Amino acid sequence: MRRSGVLRLLALIFALVTTWIFLHSYSSLNMKTIRLPRWLADLDSKKVEVVRTKCGLSKPCPDNFFAFKISSGAANVVGPTMC
Image 1: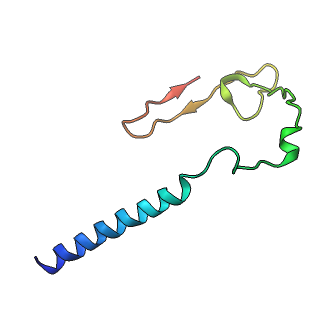
Image 2 (image 1 turned 180 degrees about the vertical axis):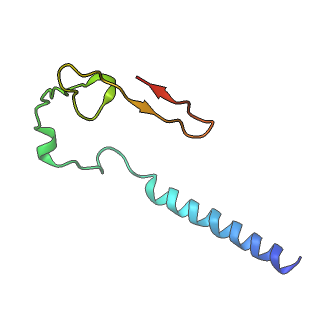
Image 3 (image 1 turned 30 degrees about the horizontal axis):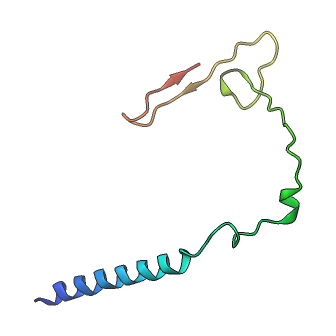
C-alpha cells in the first residue's frame, strides 16, 4: 500500500471510532436526563395575536395605498413572486 492509502485507512478508522464513541456516550439520553427549568413547566400558554399585513410586508401600508411586493427568485431554483 502507498502512503496515501494508509493515511486514508487511518482517517476512516479514526472517523468510525470517533463516531462510535460519540454515539455510545449519548445513547443513554432519555427524557429523565433532560431537565427543563421549572419555570418552563409552569408557563401558561398565552395566545399572542400576530398582526398580519398584506402580502407579508414588514410594515402595514397607509390608507389609500396599494400593498405591493416583488421578490426576486434565486437563480433558476426559486421563481420570482409578486403579490
